[in-house]
Image 1 (tube, rainbow, N blue to C red):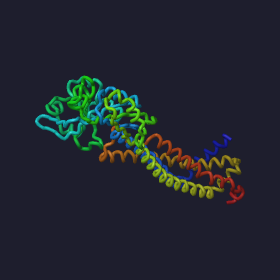
Image 2: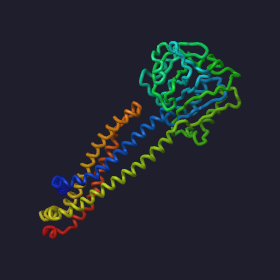
Image 3: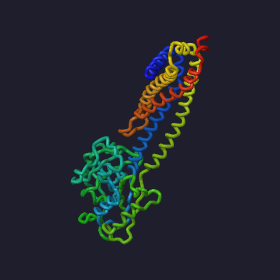
Image 4: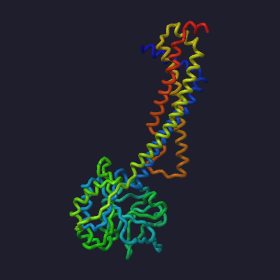
Length: 417
């Protein structure tokens, strides 16, 4: 059987070389079909990576909860410990300062900067791209000056950032350690992340903040404090989008630790849109796969048609092989493998064209759209695998019917032609 299989493969390659025009004709439909399939997988992969990056940069990674406390917190440390006990893997403050913050660089005063006070752990909750400088570190907690990461629009306006000052009722020097990429949340507006530290707590929380107790003074205003908490997506408490209250209930069960109020007001909801992104990507992929499947089926029918014509034209040749001792299995393998060889060659051509097309598209799109630094336009390994396997499978299916017809043909009738 192995000998017959080898002989069939040899005959398949010989037949392909002997009928170059027919081979090229068979390739055309498969090139289009497999190329479409490769591009669909590539587009789906790029879309998924880009959508995930966009979601993580603007709304947080999967299962990000935004918790807003509207009752004064008497012990911020205990409150944040309970956010972890409620299921949070990472916790970060995300708070607008209680008073308007002004910036001054030289003689120029900027009063329209969107400032958000955060912790260094925000980078574990949201995707933060810092092309210049760095993100906050634990060492910045010891800085005597407030520490900032500004967005690119603000950095371009400031110019020399070594003389930057900020303040509410008086000016203080600040340190800019990095420049972050703009996001859909700020666009071209000026924005800055302010690290929560002993040097910035008064600016963030206002005059009712008591650093000695690490919380707000009794009788303080209901300011509204916002935290981001990233949960395990499999945690049932992460279901805060459709009326879920488990995370809120976990927090309120321990409210006595960080509040003197008997009716603590806490609102928690799922802020990321990972699930919505998955739905959109899945729908898009299904639609593109349907189109690619139709194109690939058209290519299959083309190869099948050419295969049937080939068998009809080669009846005398195939009958001669049978008369010289070739087994039925050898001829079956020869006809099927010829179809497979043609399809695989077409798949390789489609793959090379896809690489060239994606590279050209990446160069063109790069002039109009700025992709995240870790998102590149390239044909993924999965697309290469899917393309070559589908090409071989289509060739196999398209070769079976002509092979069966070749075996049914009469050897005597074939030799008489």
